[in-house]
Amino acid sequence: MNILIIGAGGREYSIGLALTKDENVEKLYFSPGNGATDELGENLSISDFNALADFVEANNVDLTIVGPEAPLVDGIVDVFTARGLTIFGPTAEAAQLEGSKIFMKNFLARHSVPTAKYIETDSLEAAYTFINTLEAPIVVKADGLCGGKGVIIAQSHDEAKKAAGEMLSGNSFGDAGTSIVVEEFLDGYELSVFAICDGKDYVVLPAAQDHKRLLNNDEGPNTGGMGAYAPTPLVNDDIYRKLNERVIEPTLKGMEAEGMPFTGVLFIGVMVVKGEPIILEYNVRFGDPECEEIMPLLKSPASELFYKAATGDLKNARIEFHDKYAVGVVMASKDYPYKSSPAAEIIVDDIYHEELKENAHISYAGVSRGEDGKLYATGGRVLVCVGIGDSIAEAQKRAYMLVGQVHYAGKQCRTDIAYQAL
Image (cartoon, rainbow, N blue to C red):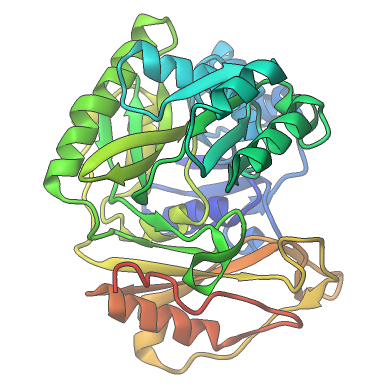
């Protein structure tokens, strides 16, 4: 099987890494890939969707897997399916679950999926009126895609009104913020749950927990994620059952009833409040860095999971996971998340420790290959050090042992990933 992966981050690298261990896979392509994906397959410099479809036809690519949200919202799946090509991901219409927070919140309300009390509006007056009915903190969200940065948790009514005003004026997030969602703040613990869907059937992956804040103890600014671990012991069978019955099944039935059956990854942002799962948001792709921990836990061939979902055949898939834990620590650049940092050469020490060799690896993200053939840190989140173990503590220890082997100027990371579970 020949497979094309769309994207350039650690998520796409980790999917590729899982597929390199899959005996069903002959050749991997990445578009565009990053400076390290060329060690797993071939990088392509093609961005136009029709030109990518031409490449897929010419090179007998059996499956395309879309990593990031932007090409999904922009309709890459529609282009490929119109040409009879097999692609994993939702159509542009179904991708509105992430592309528009207003669409998503109204969909949840229509199908009685539990979510926070909210208003969607483009009126500052209506936003102010609703803000006055809520207790602080208050959540203000831009409607469109903002690269994971369009959510403000305001600590006061005045801060919430200021955030709403800046979004609606276009100052904060441009056109993505000209309509907004204001909602009540839910106090509980957050989970990332992923369901692989084929339109009717689904497979729930081990639940993960992300660490969004830059600094230890969940302090500092929000980021795209500084690390994650899976599976989390904060999910029990009762919560999984409630998620299946109250969230995933009504969502798949609702999407089908509304003429846009959902295929791909349904990423469910969950807040557990007093034992009850309440939905914060949907995304339509794997989380990053959660994907980096979930993929190495997959025991059955990765190609089967993606191909059977893309072809509507999940009911005949045998998907198994290792009875282990994974912890991933993001190593970021010096000035992340405030501004871009100068390129810095990455040096990874030779690893002689057998335990580490067999139970830890790096998923590369914001890296480029220099003309000298060396790898350079050029992005905000540079790479993820992933440790696997029979316990969270063992996996965490191995992840941080690997962190100690990686060097580049200005490297930064949290030192407490998975602390909630430990």
